[in-house]
Length: 82
Image (cartoon, rainbow, N blue to C red; front, side, top):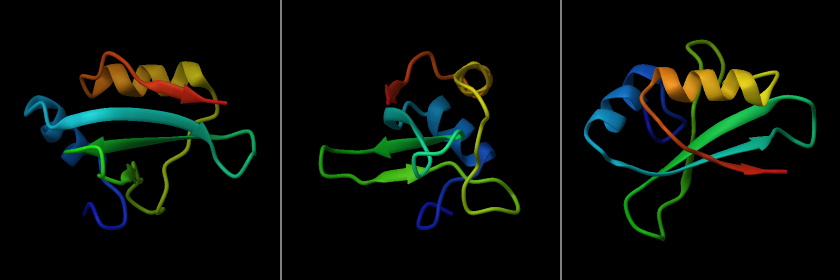
């Protein structure tokens, strides 16, 4: 679950429990696609990527699409790393 990435339904539950500390959106390997990661717990906690059902990493083609996803799971903000 969280060791290799986090699925959308688990992310939703964590958001509802106010357990998500930070959210980060960044390009994947410098390419055109965007990835979304969360951090739980204290400052030493690692970033955990959101994954899809079939792939280890879920990607989005635009920041607009990432924003719609974040809104759909109940998040109101995220940081973007260019």
